[in-house]
Amino acid sequence: MALPWKTLDRFTTENEGTLELRQRGEGDYLITLGPQVLMNSKAQRSEIALGELGCRKLKNHPGPKVLVGGLGMGITLRAVLDALPATSQVIVAELNPKILEWCLGPISALTGGAASDPRVTVVIADVAELIRQSSKAAFDAIILDLYRGPHPQNDKLNDPIYGSRAIEHARTALKSSGVFAVWGENPDAGFEGRLASAGFAVRCERPGKGGYRHAVWIAEKKSSEKPQKQHIQR
Image (cartoon, rainbow, N blue to C red; front, side, top):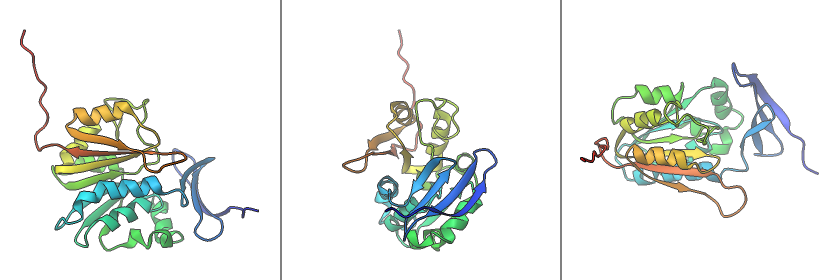
């Protein structure tokens, strides 16, 4: 018989309902929002792939700077840290201070204390605003692990994270050949097209070999120049 879930903590967000941290047995955790399961400590392959693929080219970098959007259980952050050298700097933007409290406390052991790693600075902020306000070429990689990924209903121009204007902000905030890595529930051809149009070389990975497979986009900034539209003379 499966063990029952025990609620360790809960809090009500301003706009989206009640978040809960639940546990059963040893090392088995859920974060839920109302009836929806947002994160499951036993289903981590796409989050691990996101961190690994997003930072793969930075292993031998002398001092990379990486922005992670969304802390969650810290799974993606752990994968990012494992892929980076000791000289790296990682900024994590997380909206809810309670999530940070959980990652520093009851679920810290899941990630070997990733949130308290000396390379990490966690800021309570909207990652979209942080990207928009960042200086030009501030980051070697931007990794977005948000519980709502890209989907066809996003406003193609004005979505604050996945719209074409937001993608351009991300591109500006990345150094030449920097990587923009994004987690999603399902492939989204529209989002992929917007990345390509903004000047990214993009591919969509589907980590795993069986069961439900999420999407991970790896978009590499092609050059330091914004792509120019070509005009055809008639």
